[in-house]
Length: 286
Ligand code: NAI
Image (tube, rainbow, N blue to C red):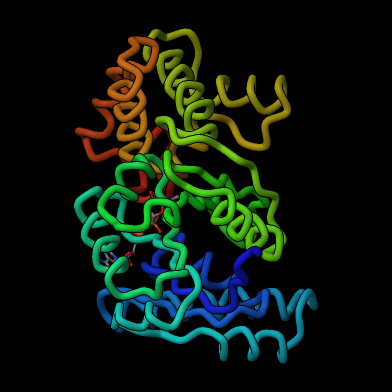
């Protein structure tokens, strides 16, 4: 029989964790939202309330829906609240040591039936699972940014993940209004394995003087019907993140085709990380 998920803990109230907590609470789940400090959670909750208020003013949801969603969010700095939940979705920083520590603690705290999921964009699920005594219940649940808008969830099966765990997570994703795809655990999963080499190639095209960033983005937008050009998207994701994922692909597959473009390295070294620093392939005012 498939396990039924009712209560959720989201770890990390940042960009992704906040979005994940929002969609889970909006779908009627009770959600413990955990971060290291109360102020980080408060910021996350304020962002969620702001998102929901915009939906109210566009008459997509009612004020009652907003209040209900906010009521279902339980802020907590105590990871021991994991003992109350059926699934933990971890969206803390992209760092193996941090995730390893979190998963070994969660394994001790959470009830036996609890699924431990991670929103990692590039770390191996199988390696995270190996720090626990329940690798069959460890799984990747990779949401896209911004979570409330993007329809896809990549569900990644580690080497030991069971069908039962997979199906419970798939049902949750569908309940959240998302489309789930099943992916095995290899570097970059499917999304970043295909996206990042395209972005890297676009950077090579700038590097080799083939064309300008604006024109390269126009080719992909107007010629291929992509909603956003690859260099605009790279600036949005963050060039440091793009570099990190290319390095993960190169290391994981040992293939030269994943070699990060020297221009990408140079921009990252210069601190030109895209939107978040005001400069990447483009310049930003705000
Ligand atoms: P972020 O920096 O906005 O948020 C991370 C949050 O985790 C921070 O609030 C931080 O205080 C908290 N945190 C760090 N260590 C913690 C711990 N031990 N316990 C509890 N909270 C802790 O980062 P973001 O962008 O939300 O990324 C989170 C995860 O989602 C990463 O694994 C990232 O690779 C993944 N991801 C990011 C995407 C993106 O576009 N930003 C897309 C898909 C996945």
